[in-house]
Every structure is written in structure tokens, then in C-alpha cells.
Amino acid sequence: MASSLTSSPFQTSNLRSAFLGERKGFTVCSVPRVGFLKKTIECKESRIGKQPIEVPSNVTITLEGQALAVKGPLGQLSLTYPREVLVQKEDSGTLRVRKAVETRRANQMHGLFRTLTDNMVVGVSKGFEKRLQLVGVGYRATLEGKILVLSLGFSHPVRMDIPDGIQVKVEENTRIVVSGYDKSAIGQFAASIRKWRPPEPYKGKGVKYADEIIRRKEGKAGKKK
Image: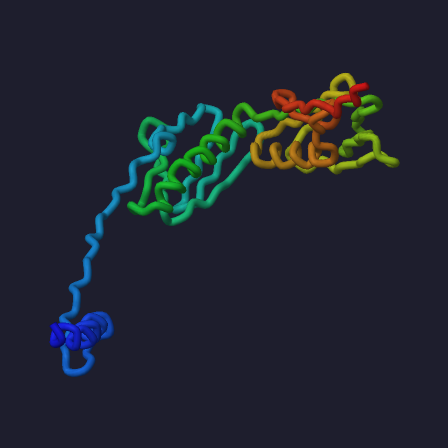
């Protein structure tokens, strides 16, 4: 019984040595490491990117390497593609954007540049427009040549230069129509107009898109007597 009690400290040291490695003449076997198998993930083809782009008869396509130029009755646009995607013109006259490599970035660029290409073709042939509406007492808009003048409740009117390639019309002093052939430029200019007075959620006053839905908030309730 005594011998078992005296040997317990040595058993504890042996247990400790199993975690501390080689100690006091005891050699601990190393635990084999668990390996992880690498699995190759194949990127699926974009549903948007694989759709062909119809080119109207009044649009001229010029393709040189990774650069594409589109010319139509409304204007001319150009775009340079990254090395992850390729643009090809088929015998039927349609355009197709394909992936050059199988990577995650190529899968992301595939659908994006197909959409940009389609916007170019539609823009130079039909054009785009963005409508805004002014909501508020005394809010109005007027045109002075190539300058859009906004009265939005400030101490002075807001004057904005209209960029080249963009047309602006004002209807009933409270409705603004921004049109042109470059969709990104139209969206940028419309957003800059809205930025001067974004619609507030209580009364809805401000500059909003015509199809924009403003989530309204309830005002503070009166004190109960």
C-alpha cells in the first residue's frame, strides 16, 4: 500500500512528460497531424453573362483586341475589357462575352461586362432616361441654357452644369427628366441632383426618383393628459 502511494508522484511526472515532450529520460511519441484535402471548385457560368447581345442594324461595332467601340444614331461609346473575359462577334451579328480563364474573378467579371456591353448597344440606339420629382412647398426646378437651377429651401438656388451628352427637361417645375446614351453618366448626374436634398422619412420632402418608395416614419405623438 505504501509503495503505491510513493509511486504516485512519479506517475504524475510521467503524465506531465507526455505533454512536455522528452523529460527525465522518457520519450513521447509525436501525434500525427491531420491533413486536409484540397478540392478544386469549378465556377459556374453566369446566367447573365452567357446570354447573347443583339446588335441593331443602325449600330456599328468595331472590335480591336480587348477594346470595343459602339457607334449609333445617338452617340458613340467605347469599353476596354479585362484579361479575364473575351468579347467575340459572331457571324449572325450578335456579340458574346466569354470567360478567358476559370477563376472566381472571371466569373464575377463575366456577368458585369456583358451588362455593360448591352447598355452600350441599347444606349447608342435607343437611349436611357431617369426621372426625378421634387416634393415640398416652394421646391421647383428651371433651366437656364445648359444650367439646371434648383430651389430646394436653401438661402440660395442650386446651380448645376449639365454634362455633355446628357439632356435635361423640366416638366411642371417639379419633374426632371435626365436622358442620354450613357447609362452610367445619366445615373451619376441624377444621383448628384438627389444628393442636394434626399427625401426625409416623416413628410417625404426632398428630391426623389419617380419610382422610388419612401418608407415613412411616424412622428412624435402628443403627450396624453
